[in-house]
Every structure is written in structure tokens, then in C-alpha cells.
Length: 95
Image (cartoon, rainbow, N blue to C red; front, side):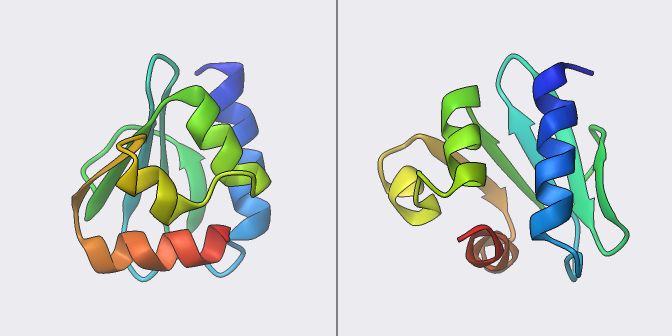
């Protein structure tokens, strides 16, 4: 796993202490993927209820709060495949 994915796991773990009521996968283009579910956050690339894909800069901006998830989606910087409701819950938790 890349350093970016490892750092993302740590940062998301802090923001999502309660986990999620489903399974989400973040794909960071060129870096790898991480999974978020009721058990927490971990590096991995498994089946998920929703898959969110972004480049490294966008993903880091989401984590830092500099990038609004809705704006990133509308601008095409973030793609969502699957359960949009779960993606919205995740976006709210990041915001």
C-alpha cells in the first residue's frame, strides 16, 4: 500500500469513529484503495455498497476540509458508483 493510502486510513479513522451502516470503498487514482464499514477504516480493495473515486489532490482536500464533497462531485473531480445515500452520509461525516 502507498503512503497516501496509509495516511488516508489514519485520517479517516479519526473522522469516522462510529463507522458506517454499509461498506464504502475509496479509490485514490494511482495510489490504491481503502474500505470503510462498521468495523472502521482499513486499506483494501473489496466489494462495496458504494465506490468513490478521486485523484490524490481531491481526496486529500476532502480529508483536510478544503474540498467540499458535493462541489467535487458536481465538478467531476469525484465519481460515485453505487449507493448514493451512503455516499452522502460519508460526505456529511467528512464535512
